[in-house]
Amino acid sequence: MDAKSLKVVQENRDYTMFSWSVQGASNPIQMKRGQGVWFWDGDDQRWLDFSSQLINLNVGHQHPKMLEAIKKQVDELCFAGPGFATEPRGALGKKLSEVTGLAKTFFTLGGSEANENAIKMARLATGREKIITRYRSYHGATMGSMTASGDPRRWAVDPGVPGMFACSILIVTVARLARRLKRAIANVSATLKK
Image (cartoon, rainbow, N blue to C red; front, top):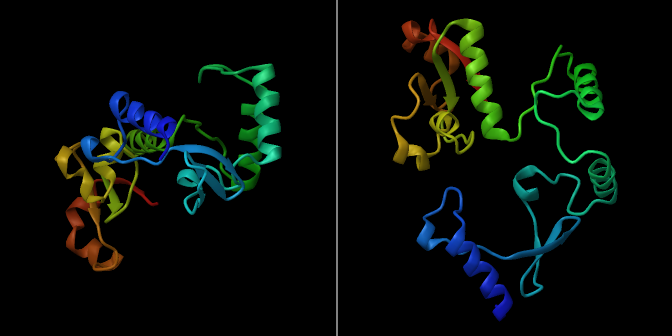
């Protein structure tokens, strides 16, 4: 790694924190640029991005249509808080309604926030507290989403938010789960899948 790449990585390690990582042991790759399914590190080595940057770039890095849409929106309006109505928000909400058949969409800034709000809405709508999630699932890094995750990395914050538990559908069928948890099922407000 050249001196510039070493400096970039060291500043990231010194002044930022990495999610789901032992901070002193993290050894991040400097990501310098991307194109399509590839990204390049600080030494200009090309990497195949199998995860699409956490499944956020399914169209690929630097897709021309995506860049054009971002640039157009930035020129018009960089940001609007969640309490404001915008043309893109209304148009996307309408399109999602047409495609999914759902009446409304609740937009959030990220996955953890979406899960936290889904948990809150399910509890408010049903009056029930319990949430069933899948064993070895991942739902995010906020307290509620981490508690909902079946990932063992969450153990450091257990017991977390009350009323959530993960189960393995590989070991226990839904019918057997219902029999075993008859009393608990009566209080379940939602299930999260990922």
